[in-house]
Length: 96
Image (cartoon, rainbow, N blue to C red):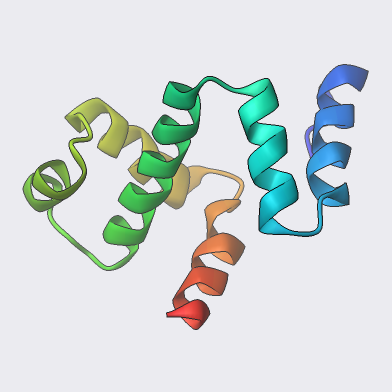
């Protein structure tokens, strides 16, 4: 965890950890995000799944509607980021 995060950001993280089911997460996200923000996050996660499966940028754009910039940003996060996508993608692949 980044030690530069404010107390407010830490509280947000704690809120997510506290939520224990899909309904609670859904309600919380609906309260704090716009529908577009939720869709954007969902799109980035889908892009990450496709990139992890070595799907081409063109195919990802066609399947998700994501811009090349978004795909590149997610790709950089997967390659050089703090590896936050990994446990989520591992979990989702187990669910399938």
